[in-house]
Image 1 (cartoon, rainbow, N blue to C red):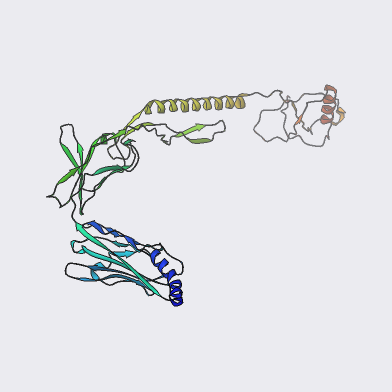
Image 2: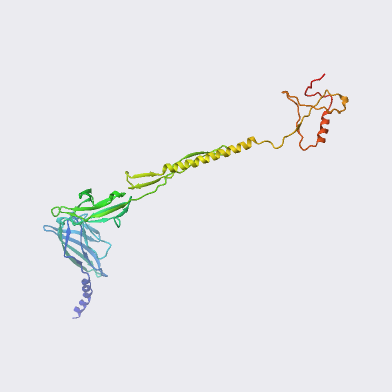
Length: 391
């Protein structure tokens, strides 16, 4: 009796942990052909129990085998037809679900998830769960149009796109249409996305898309139409044109000046080669600038002329009086310098030895004394000039 009680005490933790270490999943899953699916398999981690091994096996109609195994050496994909298409998460403890890509019709079957744990006393506990997988082909559903930005009203020149989204077995083909005034549809693209690099006002209109695959006898699904509105954008540009102007200064130098010319441009359909540009008031602006330049040149010329006349025509304020000093050796020695004869400068082209002194700031008495001194200079010196005899 005591032995049974002791065994029950030893087994009770294992029974309790065994109840906690239970796998959860689904009994049946339908996958879409050429699509992807996830086979859920999860448990709640328990202290002192470490996952020792994980295995995913499959049983087909005519074959079976182990698809995936994870142990101490790493992850292993054992069936070649699943390589590159299956994976199991590593970063989430307790989540050992199998993810399958590009489902094929041959992938249908029974998939079993088996997990083995090692307890702290080195005992092993194994649990498994089986999920039945069906792979079906699904016709394309009605597509939905999604815009890259909220709203369907944009300014001219903006960049936007519309995307057609439908579910079903791939491959799904898409086509984009634009409604016309005559009720006919204009085919725009055969891609899922319809994009504009630069919108124009002429792009305003109603658009819709179609989705189709090879399931359901090629039934075509059409989306609801959406209306795109493009507002016209007026852009003002300031263009500078170099204008060379030569202006004269009173000192004779010239200056070259570059004058800006303003051009106002109205653009429609920004970003397109066929945009319509209109230039306004260009001639009027250039004419005004030329008038300003012409007035500046005329004013400069007038100032230069006035300064030139002032400098060149101005008369001296005071005339300078000069005295002629000369020596006459032919005067009589006995005159005792009493002669007061007046000498007039001859008109001659011969070089004269005159000494010119200004009489400014001298009195008339000083001038007469100096004149007598000049007349009384040595009698032996010969005059530089000859005075004709009157005899």
